[in-house]
Length: 233
Image (cartoon, rainbow, N blue to C red; front, top):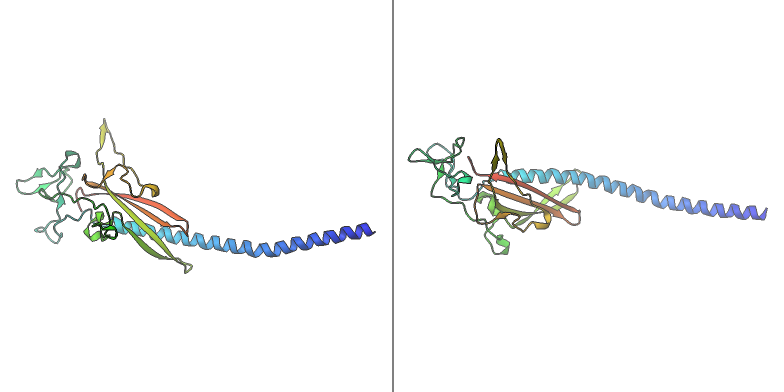
């Protein structure tokens, strides 16, 4: 009987310990689940904002060298002359005006106007890339801006956006009826590198790489887009 009472006491102690562990663990699990749910909500809101940010930048003008505003036919928006046949040089002419060799291009070229070099550094680092895309996409290069994102849960999150802008190869290889082009994307680990692009060898194609990051939120996402100045600005 004493042995049985001793076993019952041990079982009771184990039961108390298990109940205590459960009482402590359940709130923690609920808190973790709540934090995870909140984090997922914030992540969704952050990605929505980042997508909108990319669309906003994509709508910016290709370069800062454009000379006019397309208000009427007498003041056309000029696209710049790029001195390579592969980039559809401005050789289609009526003797006075110039257009791309591309027969579908209706925007007039300025045959004396060349694309600007992409600034190597931002104004914060002594360069000329101001971050103001009103001066062209190249003004984003090497800069970082902070985006304040407010989630549906009321959380305010700061996300850093770091930019890389380069001219990239626009050549197309044609074999039979197949045309092939290789466009190299950017990455978070090489956001400051050329990655097959160039600052000062103009083509009609610019690649913009944006790294969105916040180490506390464990956000590190890289998005890329390409924009051509063939046919429009």
